[in-house]
Image 1 (cartoon, rainbow, N blue to C red):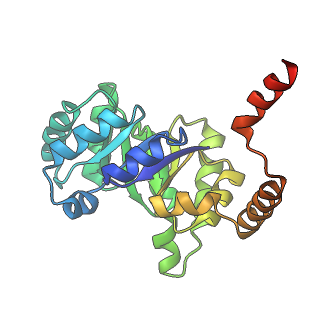
Image 2: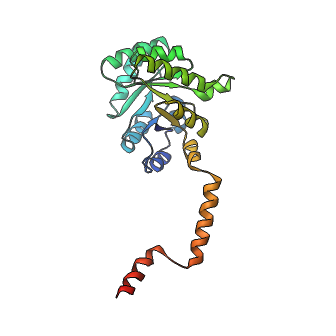
Image 3: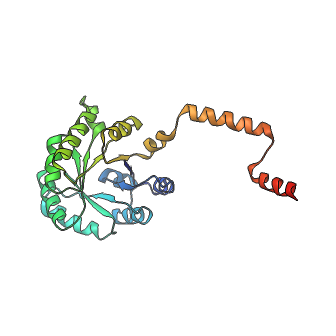
Amino acid sequence: MKLFIDTVDLSEIRDLNATGLIDGVTTNPSLIAKSARPIFEVIAEICDVVAGPVSVEVTAKDHEGMMREGRYLLGIANNITIKVPLTIDGLKTCRALADDGVAVNVTLCFSPAQALLAAKAGAAFISPFVGRMEDIGAEGMVMIKAIIDIYNAYNFDTKILVASVRGPHHVVEAAKMGADISTLPPAVLRAMYKHPLTDNGLERFMADWANTGQSILSSKKDINDHKI
């Protein structure tokens, strides 16, 4: 499974990208607004850091406006993916951009029926929101499973990008089902490697090592001195 990071925080993106674990970035108008910076500037900096797809969402509601904004956003960098909402105008825009070879991420998906339409419209990615589904008492992961079944049955090329992820459990369940990608807030990705038994085990190992009085970096010198 690929992992995207859902943020526009450059310090977080740089730090997590340095791990080699990040395959792309997703953004949305809310995240851009919180940055209090010009969208062109923010996205250009992100694209300089991350080699993978960077999803940038249009804000127009009509097809013509979406097309104009999409064309403008594509000029920022070569790894831009245009993000459109799952509305009739969004799907129309997806079809037009996809026909021109543009990667499109269709977002705000809350049902398998919507996901089917996005795939038929040529979406490169579909972003179903599991956390928001669970906020209203629905089973978000059931939706993911249904989308996977539909896409597999018809061999759609659209990648399932699990969004609105609230914790590592969503990532693990999506991976078990065979979803292609999860996009995570930085805190969720960091939570994935944390475990109290790992921390406790490391403490014990280091305590035992300290008792030996050894240093790994000085060991080679000691061996060489002994050979002499």
